[in-house]
Amino acid sequence: MSNTIAGAEGRGYNRGLILGFTMAESLLLVVFCLLLVAAAIISKERQRATEAEQRATRAEEQVLAKSHDAEELQKQIKEMQVQLAAAGRDQSDDEWRELVLAKKAVEALAVKFSDKNPKEIVRKVTDMLEDYRELQAAIPSQKRLQDEHLKALAEISRLRQDLDSKAKELASLEKPSKPHEWPPIITLSEANNNYFRSGSAELTVAFATKLNSSIADQIASNLQAYGADIVEIIGHTDEQPISRAGSNMDKNAIDVLLAHKNVTSLEPADNAGLGLARAISVANVLKSNKSLDGITVLPLSAAQLILPGDTLTRGEAGDVETRRRIEIRIRRRDVADQ
Image 1 (tube, one colour):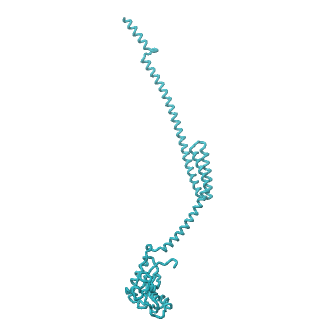
Image 2: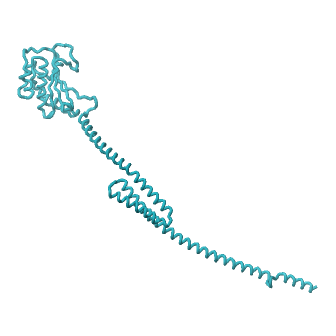
Image 3: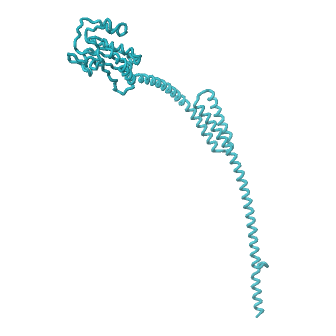
């Protein structure tokens, strides 16, 4: 029985042998072979990776070189564009020569980079040449617009001069007062003790003193406030007739106004003459006042025609103090009067 068991074990052992190796030894051999194959594959892949890195480095160097060339070309293109723009603004002979040189430079750049195949650069150079052609085509229109612009500037200058002239005229006509605001009328009536001797143009002392002080100051203030330069002295009378046969107003009025004769030399024969004589008397006092220096004083007569309040009379005879008055009105000189 022992022989039978030993024979069975021998057959099992023989089945575990492969080419004289045990099963474990065979497995180790297979693993070793696989490791050799893997090492060979890894070594080959490493070699390929190294070669790929070298190719990438060379490609990167080429890209950098082309990028540098592209930047240089872009810089030159910008310079050419500046020259082209300057040539479009000014039409002088020197700038035209620069424009021709710029065109040749651009064409030379296109030739320079054509053998390196920089498609983007060629496209930009081509676009720039097209812009140059469009610029040349637009030059006549630009010159026409420049001529029109110069004409417009000249017209604007002329209009400004006209406007300044009109503004000065308007300023000379404008009044410092509000529209429709008129200076007040100063009324000096006998009812307020501003009177003359009966039938005479001679002033009383009190009346002359008032004219040279408060009344002159009031007139000067109104002249300044309203920008006026003319004072009108208007003599008014009532409707009582004057009992004098003849008048010397035509003979003496101008001499009295020029201070060649005294106001007492005036002898009016009617209310119109009396009103004028009294206006001349007041005008001479105001003309000599320093606060009214340079002001035009005009003596006028309304005779017995106008009632207080600027109403025409319908015939109201009698001794009426309020109608025997001097009215002082100020105004601005009309441009036509100057």
